[in-house]
Each structure stands twice: as C-alpha cells, then as structure tokens.
Length: 305
Image 1 (tube, helix red, strand yellow):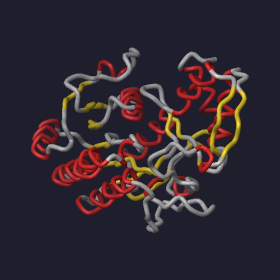
Image 2: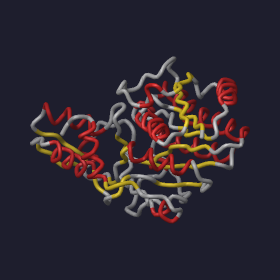
Image 3: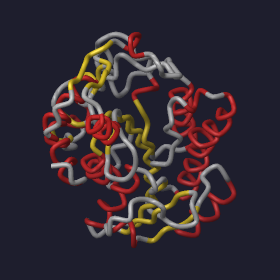
Image 4: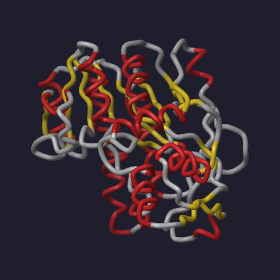
C-alpha cells in the first residue's frame, strides 16, 4: 500500500512514515521544504521517498499527487502555533494551511477515489464543562482562530470527499520537534520552581503510539470521526508535569495555578479537553497505551532516563 503522508517534518508525520515502513508499506513523505528537514535520527523517514509539496497550491497538489498515485493519504500537515495564529498578520497563512491546504488534499483524494485521514484537535470544541466530547458531537464553538481553522479543515474535508477519517488528538508529544515535555524538562533543569495550570483537563498523545493506530485505521473502510489520545484517565497540565519530573528524577517544585493566575497566552485555551475515545473500541481498534507508560518510553527514547 502506497501512502502519501503530509507534514513529515513534524512530530506526527515523522512517526507515521516510520510506522508505515516498519510494516512493509510504502510511505511517500512530503512537506514544504526542498528536502526532509526533520530529526536526522537514522530512522526510516530519513531514507524514505520525499517530495516537496506546498499544500496551499492546488495545482501543485493535484499534479504531484496524481503523479505519485498513492492508495491513501494521511494528512498531518498543519499550522499548530496556537498563539501565533491570533496575530492578524498570520491569519491568512493559518487559513491557507489548515483550510485551503486540507481542501486541496481532499479534492485530489476524491478524484483518485482513495481514503484520506485528517488530523484534527480538541480545539474545535468550546472547551467548557466537564463531560468528555463525543467523537460524533457537532456542538462546535472554537475559542480561538487555530481551532476555527482546524474546524474549517474538518468541514471542507467532509464536503469534498466521502472516504475520510477525521481523528482529533490533544496534548501531543513526539521525538521530532518541540513539545510540552521537552519544554518542561528544560525548565526543570534550570529552575527550582515552575508554575503550571491545573484547571485545563485532558490527556496526552504520544505520536509513536498514535501512528500505530492511524496506520491500522487507514487500511480499513471504517470512515468517520474519531478521538485518539493515550489512555490512563483525564489529568491537568500540572499533573502531567509532576509525572514528567517524577520519572525524569527532577526535584523541581511544581506549583499549581489557575489559567487566570498564569496569564500570558494570546489565545484562549480550553478548560475541558476531555475526549471520549470509546468509538475506537466499538469500531474494533486498539486504544493507545496508558499515558504514564507513554511518558516513560518517550523519556527513554530521548535519553532523559
């Protein structure tokens, strides 16, 4: 099976290509840079076929994708800088990547009559309340422009093709690129104390684990909306940080604060990022492992324990 993966310079795209290759499938990586520019870690993604493609260029997307003749698309490319998305000068870029780029990918997938998978986010919801968001919930009300742009991506995908998966994730960490764990490790090594919010609740997602699920899914016709984060219950960023430091052996004091007390962020953040993942089991997919186990494996992968 030949699978086109967008956004391979990022955390998830990197792991998806590696997972495809590990199963003997044929990944084609793509991103906007002339050559692969992710982690040079010697894994399969470093030697896999790579094509330069600007997903916001409809003509280029159509021509190159049709030339490559993939049998499926896993669309990981996205603008993910949440605070930067609030800057007025970035608005057109955010829309171009998350909406126009997704529309272009969906249209060519439809033309080729192949399945396409779009990676979305808990930010499409309003982040209020305490009930987990159901995968098929349509009660959308994004709090910020990033969330609105990802919702536009979801809608254009569903409007332009029938063979689609929309997989919402949250609190992502992986080997290739920046993430919360790497940031907190750096802070913990240079500070005696760190303040972390304890009123935003969700669950982390390890890209290594997620990639396995996505590759399982793309080989089926069980299309639709899904939620996928690691198991182990819902936690706060404060809880997450405490566990990271515990496993890494750091003695940094973690002080819980409210979002209002923390301040700083340009973009409004959801208080409720609880995602109901029960649809995965109902559709025959294996849930992701416990998030504490994922943190342990990740810290080992990056040489922190």
